[in-house]
Image (cartoon, rainbow, N blue to C red):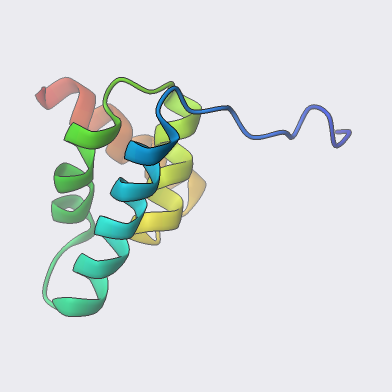
Length: 81
């Protein structure tokens, strides 16, 4: 793959995506008992209007998920909403 095909998707609302990532990081650092599923469910309202690629990237950065795990949480959040 070339660098051009690996470019990250552009968010519609970069401020909300950044807020969601910061929320995920703060939840993870404040509460050691919180699950990754809880973190992504709290991030979801901020990023739900974004593309799948942007949401998966936010879940990876904010909740500390692997890319494959983030896709699973994306589908779970989308199905629940």
